Image (cartoon, rainbow over all chains, first blue to last red; front, side, top):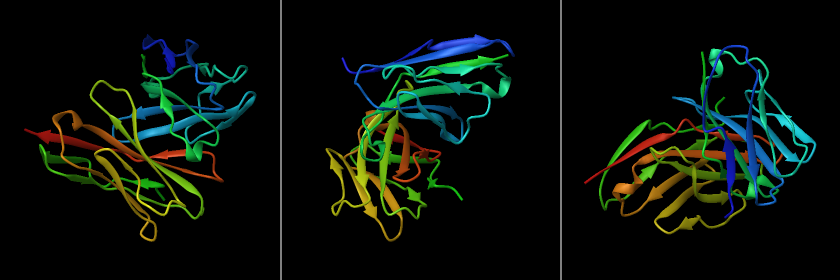
Length: 114
Length: 114
């Protein structure tokens, strides 16, 4: 089944404790992206990747890191999480070019930073 | 300036009636893609419909159609014959060919009344 998977689905952590949210897709998509969703703000892009080893900042990259060492995986790293990073996070992927192709979304990761 | 504007935070529609969800966008790029996604209360993001800036005809997918008015920079989603399962948040999104980022609106919450 074609899908984007994210782990964990739910995470409660404390300020400053490094964490990684994994994202994997099995559709051989070139484009991958991370979003955060906050009430009243819609989805905002954190980072995206056009292909392996090619990543770039979205609208809200502060406090996040990403890497794209393999085509299928695009982990999101929070080196020192803070309470303002409490949010619902989505990973998505699409064929290239993403302007003309739908994004497939993962199920979301609900993160709470205390 | 906001790239995507959805001015209707909440909408109600009677079952079996049609409803239009508004979306306006801001871009100077001649090449861009417009997307609509549905987010039910369960949280997943579901792709509904796509419109390319060079498409001559309005996109349609089953009960969903996109009223694309390029000169007015609007891309309204029309849902015909509303069903109870259409109750959800709806997000409009855009990607410019030159910009690489995706922009989402703040969403419209649709409630279908029996």
